[in-house]
Length: 522
Image (cartoon, rainbow, N blue to C red; front, side, top):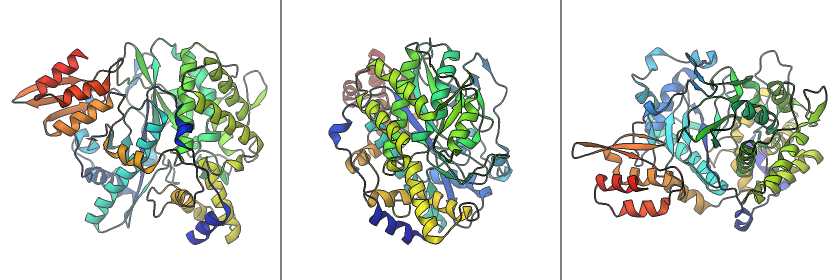
């Protein structure tokens, strides 16, 4: 089956590479990606995957710090000014939650590992999750996102050796049996922006962003929805409300969780859960770069000229529209294409004239023009198009029907997201020169070990590398350490800090008290 696909890659597809000079204009800001990975264990059913996810995370062999400081988090805190009593739980996931497999404490369940590169690796509801360190530029983010794939895969390989069974890791968002797991994004947003303005101006953008950010999906898992052979987004099926604090069930298009992980007086974290897991480096950079610009646009006080009648319905329609016209209803009883919605945001972002935005703006415009002309011309850049091209060719060569043979095509869909370069179809495309890539091997290798130099992650990574055995708790904002029986809190400065200089000073210290003195002066 795969031979047919790979032979088509080599013969029919030619890819492109971006030169480093074309990436110098990446936007400077602060953002990160949290990816929950799918896991499949040989001869194991879904009821065993919760425990196996923990074991995969615990198989990390490098230096790390733990436990995580959960007292610094409050996932039930709603930005609209209240706390919810409890978060919604997905009944599809709950049926696989065996009491005998439950960990004794949240810390034992999460198995947190904070790594020398500033990232966080942990178990999240039966999925190994990798949260990139905070990044200030898209090139660094892409490198750290790809480093996460390798770290989770290496953990799975170590666990597989112990089990004597194969373990596969998938960077996707669905098991095709009704369960979805997330790929979340975080952006800084000024606290003073009215939340109603955030929702009003962000919802049309998120509902239509999938035309270039979708990962592609065979079939639909939205009960009651009409059959759909192939859609743009893996996540669109799983959204049901416009806004809420939930992430696991009754998912919102706009998430209202108010968990800043920073200075809550000045900022909020814009927590975006409406995205797919992109294998494509180009799609990752464009998705995050465009969203970061839109966050700046919303901060500026801009008001969208486009109001959708039902943004949740719109993301589902756009995902499933087989005509690729992507027409959606507006509140003024008119209709507009998803491409034109995105163009409205693009035009406004250009008017901001933000330094460093040229790459995102130019690629965003070229991509929208190509989507309006013929989306299939983007087979070397966008995941949903690349995957569709593969599946179309395979279905034609094997005389498969998209409805009758959906299970076979879903297996190939899943194989596209296998992060093992020797097995994944995406990496087959990369090897064939058929996918645009943005970072090179040297950058990914560096991201496995080194944190971004211009964020507080540089300090976190350095402290993990030097003092992992003395760290008693850790969070995004700081660490608690113990030396000679004394407990010392090390808050990490967030803004206007010279992180390289601070790291150099810490490297020269002889004790943790000296480290604390350096950080207090920052």
